[in-house]
Image (cartoon, rainbow over all chains, first blue to last red; front, side):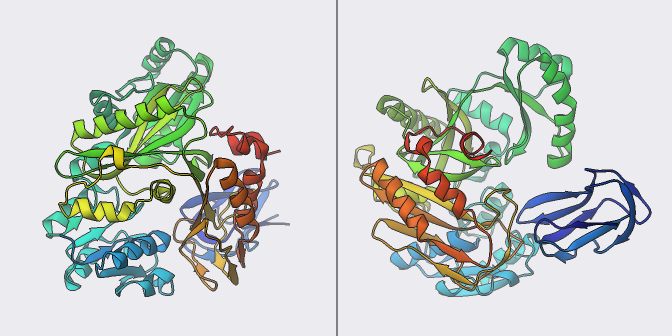
Length: 70
Length: 446
């Protein structure tokens, strides 16, 4: 299991994957938006999305878990 | 006449404009979003009105609401600051339709300067030197490749509607161009809704040097020397200084006079800034014109002793320029650093709550603040929360003063770029004036 975490505080602008989707290393899974900047958050390994912890528009803090992949 | 002024902005620049209003005895009105209720500028103004929710389209970009408040509060003028609506030609038109004086140039010029290909054409006709390139969009890859060969590699591939460093790529040969063309076109289409690309000769080791100009409504204009703003991250300025450590006196005067001739030619009014790229041989080329007050205007104020906001208000009121070129002095050296709420290494934003703010104080230090010691820095707006301007009789003295001031500058609770600014101020290459636009990558990244 791998937790994909927010690298900064901001709002969830886009979620590029859904539960069951296969992701590969370095693929952008979520795009956060903060202070006029969009920051893509990418997967660190290959796997399948098992849970989305956030939805678009949510506010997250640095270190919050966004997506879980197995 | 400006008898009551609404400031359509927030943060440090709103506070800056309020200070000049107080000095000139002009009552001023602040507007704020729900996220800014406790911001320092809100309590500084004579009156303050809530615009709406924290998002910019519910607040600082909400034109109808801003005009409604201006009317309700009996304002006759609007200062747009920088960013937000300051370079929005339709907003300037709406102000004049509502009988309000927009403190800035006329809307047609704002509109033309907003498109890079249009601005190139206009300034070429007004006699400014341009980087060798095309003043028209590229038709296709074949056209791009033919044009690049004519101009000579390396070239810069740019989006016509681009800004903020997006849609721009240096290309060193035909192979690179083929690889870059369609991707950049798609990106421009996606970001700006306009895939038009154009091409310019790449200036190697460029410096970013800009001329502050000011014109009245009677065709008189002056320049207030230059600012060098080469030290940038993500193509946004971090450190600015005046005078430039690089320009020789002949080039400096030549740039100023060329800028004044150009703005007279196009009938420009109010304050503006012409940005140039300057190459290693001191050749200068028009880059773009900002038709508003600039973030870094305080360094010009520090070396000239003038108040740019006051001058903007006076010329917008219909007063003649009381200054001739010979009246504009240049004394000492000023450096501005922008304090960003961001990680000093990755430059990722760092919103949060400030738990304490300790400012260095000295006669050579000027602060421009958008926050106080318990502010919530929200994720909705630009990460720049404050600026510090430091002076010295010489550049070396200003740098010494900057380093010691930064050592005493403490913001707790959020991450800021102060460690990066301190590294820049203490770097031997900065001291030597080796301030090209790749400074941070070249000297501070391992």
